Image (cartoon, rainbow over all chains, first blue to last red; front, side):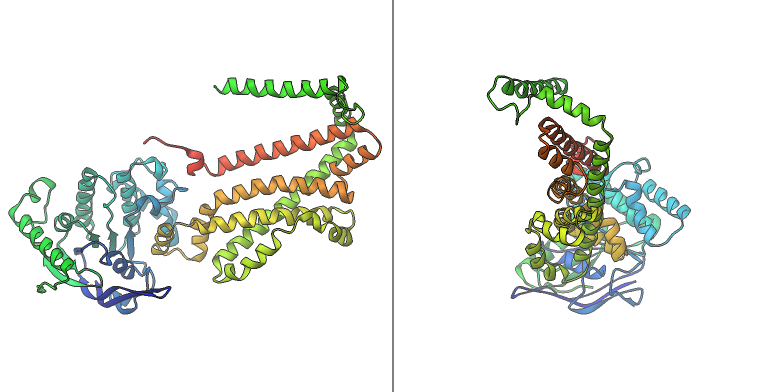
Length: 262
Length: 257
């Protein structure tokens, strides 16, 4: 579904040359939920923006369903970490969700259906008339997720979406993402710096090295599909997986390349 | 609290008027050039019942409103264009910085040469003065676009025009509103100045006539009218601003969930 091949991104500006991403190759199957995790400052956001067509890579390519990504493709939706800045404060919740659909030239009836359905599935059916700034942080991020859902993307890109909310809200939102993924069969690429979150959410975890970034390791998460905050997080397998990811990230920070296991 | 504030404000105004009444009557200033408030009020009453006054007021407001409308549309259009077209900002910055500080009144001779005492003379001065107020604010406003909002819009496939309409314009709107409010005040100043100096029909010309015919209380009455006009324009602009920016931090204040 999504293929990233030999991706490299070098920022050039005012005499400084920064290689944010060196050489990344990985793919995401249709309907898969993949978490990208890496040490802070490892170019996760750069990578995701290249995948989403918001940044042009210096070398390499991204393909969505076989087509090369050169600008934001219609089949992709982006959920940003900064929900407060990503939602438009001059529009009500319903209008925020509806705006991308207008750009898709959908009819009024269809738009209304999609908006109602998306808000319903994130538990905000009553909030359509409110302004985003009247809602709590967690609710605002739900609106941003609803906006992405209504867009009916093939691939959903999420850039540390829960980094700015409190722990309890975060647990709820994680379960929301798991539920939506299972219900709707969307392909999700989820970037996080939180190891527990990556293991809890993902079907597969891709560990990135420190910048300049390469893939440090890929890890299949063989936890049951039915997960919950209480039991999954204390299961022995969860502990093993998170230890494994943790070790890899420590290795990445030291700059040592851990052995790549597919 | 609000009631007390209003009462204090009214008391202050009353005291000021009483002072204006008392000072000339006590002979502290020459009554010929500074008539007591009561006589100014009488003159104001006579003005209000004179048809010529109302047509002068109409002329001034026409020049003000037309000039402001032209300046705002041109300022917004130019500002957005400069923001959207690459390199245009860099190319125009120095020219704008050069033209902007030229005082509009310095163009009075040009206006007279071109249009004599017609309305167009007034418009030239009003538009020149208010255009920069709007343009500068629009240029600040379009720089304020949040990169995350912009990227969100791009990621959902919004094209250039859709991004101008849904992201750039709402972001710039608070600045535009400030620009319009400033421009509205400047436009009134320039409209009256043009009438006063050039003699284009309006309140300014009427003030000049009152002065040359030694009708001092009438002159003060007309000055008071221009002051009230400025006050009303500011109040009006603020209420439009509050309505258009109900969503904005500066207006909405802190909202409980």
